[in-house]
Length: 260
Ligand code: SAH
Image 1 (tube, protein in one colour):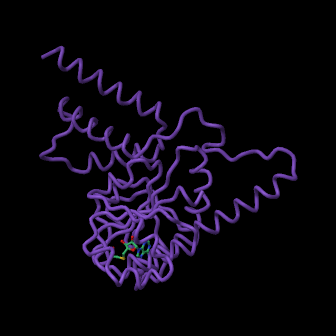
Image 2: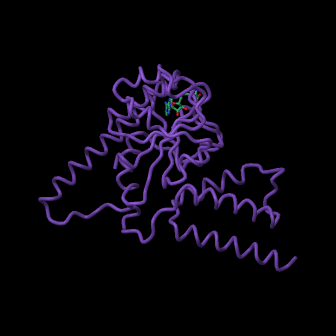
Image 3: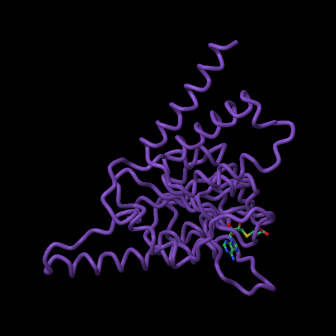
């Protein structure tokens, strides 16, 4: 389970925070670190020094130019934010999030990303709108923002607790008769979940088609695409449902071309 959880740090400006985050990850058994447009040298001496013994993670961290690339293969993307936003998004607490992960990671193809923002400005609204849900660590409302690596530590710790509980449950299940496996939506699902890359391609297509039929005006977008993102991400689409939606858009496009 832990090997399919990715920590994504966007625009980190202090190499020491990258080092401290790798230490927090390694302590909790997480290994997959993605850095999106870091604003510092992630291999600065300060990163190695704060990583303590976790220097292999500093070396193996992958760098990306865009969040979309860092989470393209992920089937659940969760943004960590210290602040609430204007357009409410599905919110989850750290423990509930971690407890939902064994289920979310049930399909072999499933991958989870936990996304963290910049030390000074956090995550942008556009970045948060690329996440299925937001996680807020319940801190003192008068002083709510944790240090980046401390936020990574809290979520990584909760992931580890959920992993240990899962191990406990499966070791006691071996002696018990056939344990019912918890599945998403309570049943064994027939198709793998859509990936983030599938979703992003769908949103681009959806916006083009809605513009073509003049339902959406890119010069006066309001919150339409953000609201549609929220709707479709809340549905946790599978790959077949994704294909059906793309097929519907493709047919609308074809009809429009035939007409003109
Ligand atoms: N000043 C920024 C906070 C930056 S802290 C702001 O106002 O948004 C750096 C990152 O740590 C945040 O982007 C977030 O990903 C994470 N973080 C810090 N405190 C958090 C909290 N209470 N809950 C969830 N994530 C938090």
